[in-house]
Structure formats: structure tokens, C-alpha cells
Length: 86
Image (cartoon, rainbow, N blue to C red; front, side, top):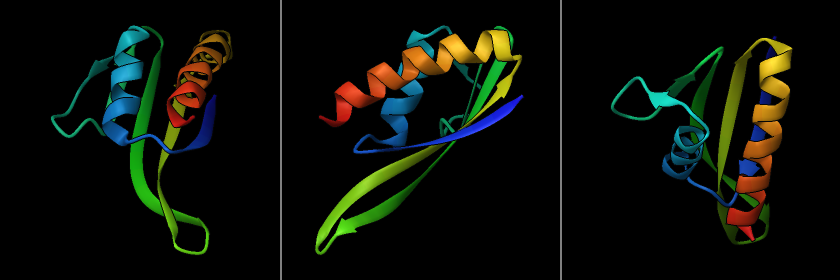
């Protein structure tokens, strides 16, 4: 299974930190890929302009793995990412 999610208001570094806290390990020095037991996540970062001059960082995370592993992982990651942006 593969699922792509976008998160505004957090950095790629912070997203990789969250994934490490959820049992993953960075497999490259830039933090573009984090792997855990039965899952992997590829991260990229871009700027987003939701309104006028407001500019936010936007992290895209592509999760890969079995649905039984990914669903709870993404749910836990979502909770962390939402709190960070607020």
C-alpha cells in the first residue's frame, strides 16, 4: 500500500523527527527517507502560499507498507503534525 499526505506548517526535519519517535530510522543524511518495521516514508519539502503573502512550509510524506501497519502509524503521525502546525 502507498499513501501520500501533505502537511503544512512543519519542516521536513521535524517530520523526520516525528517518524523516528514512531520507531523509524533515517536512512539518508538529508532525512528524505525514514524506515521502520514494516513501513517506509519518503519526505519532500516545498513552500506553499495559502493566501496572499503568507508562506508556509509544506511537507509531502509518501508512506509505504502494509495497511495494517500504515493506518495506525499515519494516524499517530497526523496527531503530531497537526499539533506542530498550530
